[in-house]
Each structure stands twice: as structure tokens, then as C-alpha cells.
Image 1 (cartoon, rainbow, N blue to C red):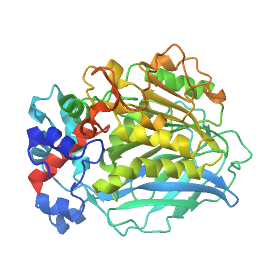
Image 2 (image 1 turned 30 degrees about the horizontal axis):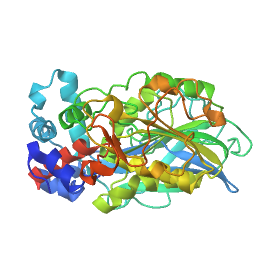
Image 3 (image 1 turned 180 degrees about the vertical axis):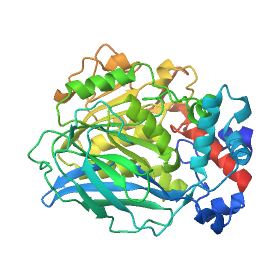
Image 4 (image 1 turned 45 degrees about the vertical axis):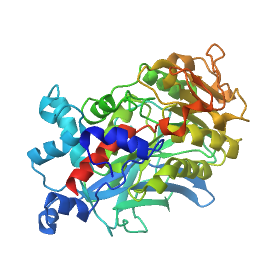
Length: 452
């Protein structure tokens, strides 16, 4: 365990190179209570909260199946001074009191409270469904070319209770009740999903036609400015500063939502743990087209599981929609992306339409970590593109498989490379790889170490 606040980034990066799994040891359930000195009686008085993650649904011979997933939890009653103490562990060379304004202070406190929650096991979860006139984590308007479902009103109870970590994740057949069959429509249909018994568990479900295009996108350093490879900046950008889009990337996605066929959907995948998901969803649905969402469930809490969580979630959606095509978007600072995306193209050659990777090493002077392009060997070199700015993506005929802007240099060596460092071969060494959420999670380890 990396135990020093100021050294956590360096120590844990060396200990776990190239993986976004520094949440090892994050307290859950009774560990949170004991570490904060809170008893069960105090917690009983707190209302139950539900994180309802926007789901996707697929069409089968039996009808529509919705993948309901999320977490049931309670907020322990923690004093603001204690919250500030916990938040300060995540902030390098600053503190909540020294942040620029009340907005940053409140974000740091809210995110910290979201991390130190008490998950509720063995809970029966029931949902209410109805047509969604808008879309997003809490019904915000957004882009995208989905339509309000023409039916689907119903109530249901999930077939299983929540896990020990408070998670639920299950495909459930729903009644059609006027919904368009997935093999007879070219439109993505929207349903509002309300968790009964709480005001916190609202989401939008996206019912995808059997065929079409799904854009699967990472978030950090591709849709928002994180600079996770610069520990101090990455932590401030994650814990305190309001999330900021990366350049004009929202315009690119808005154009895709308007110009791609009606059967196009958007799916956002981050390996940030569930506790931080609300902040991400709020940003996405106010900035990018509405779509389904995936995050790291709490039952993926050890290093071994973390190594495979992204591929696990990607494989799930690929196998759920075997006739859909996928456009994969991320950046080169994320080492699991750099292995998982090309591997998917090798494994599902008829399903990967395009791979778009922002080359952070070529444009960001703070990105000192080499990336590995070995996995792209053997793929059609016109099926992927390493780009530098969002405008590099304009004008591509994605629907017909045009993935390469030929004016953008590629310089792929099929090995370790880093333009800023002048590395164009295997000399980089494995200890320099970086995951997309390294410093964020390293700080969490430091915080937990102070509590346990």
C-alpha cells in the first residue's frame, strides 16, 4: 500500500505500472463505518440512495432485454470538517480551504462524500419505466438521434438482490407495451427508468436496433481535460475544477449524432469506480449526445480484476449486439485501451468499424509515458487513426468505413513509442506505461491508508 500523500503517485505508479487499478483497498460498507467511527444506528436514519447507470437494451426472439445496473448505498453523516480532511488527501500541494472558489470547494466535498459511502447489500430493487421525451442521466436534453419510445410503460422488480457491495447488474426482459421491435426499426428508442423508493435513482435506457453503429468512448483526456498523466493537475481537474471539454470535441460528437444513420447510438465507458460516476454522467449528458454508460462496479476491487475490467465491459456489449458495428474512441495515455481496442479488432473483425485514438504523446508536453502500438500489427492500417486535435476527425465517412484522414501523419512502429521523448521502438520499458486514471486512484489509496 502506498501510504504517503505526497509520494503516492510515484510509488503506486511504479508498483502497478500501466493499470487503472489503484483503488485497491478502497473501503466499502462496514469498513467506511469503522474508519469514520459511525455505528449502524446512525446509518439507519439515513435515506437509501440508488446510482442507476443509464442502460442499453438489446432485441432478442423473446423481445427487449434491458441491462439494469448500478449501486444501492447510504451517505453516512460526516461533518464538513471531516469531509475536508478526507478531501485534502486527494489534493497535491493544496487543500479545500485554498481552492480558488466555492464551486471548486463544493465539488471536492461532494466527490469525497460520494467515495465514502456505505453500500447496501441484499436489497430488492424495483423500477418504473415510461417513454423518455429527453435523455441523459437525469433526463437532461442532449444530442443523439434517439427517439421517445412509443410505449413501454411498466413496473418491474429485478430478479436478484444487490450484492455484498450493493451492486446490481442484470439483463431483464421487459414487456413491449407498444415499443417498436428492434429488428423492425432503425431508431434508438428512449425509456425513462425510475428506481422506486428514492429520488436519486433516475436514468435513461437506450433500446438499440439489431443493426447499426455504436460509438464507444472513453472519457478522461478524450472528452474532457483531465491531464491524468500530470498528478497534480489530474487530481485538481478530477476533484475540484468543473469538468471541461477537450477542445471542440463536443462539436465532433454533435456532428456525428446529426450525420450518422438513425440507428447510431453512443456508449460511454470509464473505469473510474461507481462512486465517482455521477460527476461523469452529469458532465457527459450536458455536453455530449445522450447514451448508455459503463463504469467500474465495486465487485471489481482487486488488481487482477481491474486489469481486465475494460475488456470485460467491452466484450459484454460486443456480444450483446453481434450485428452492430463499433467505433472505438480513446487516447494513447490509457494502456489498457492500447491493448484492448486492437485486440477487439482482431477478435471481432466484422464488428470494429473504426478506432480513433488521440495521440497525447504527440501534442501534450506533460505526457511523458510511452504508448504501445504492438497490438495494431496485422490490422488494416486504414481502420484506425492516431489523431492530434478533434478537427482531424471531420469529414470522415464513418458509416462507410472511412477511418483515416490521410493528411494526419501516423508513424506507427508497432512497438513502444513516444513522440515527445523521441522513442520509436521498444526501449521505453514497461515501467513507464500509464493508465488513464493513475493519479486519481493513487490519491484514493493514500486517503484510504490514512483511514485504516
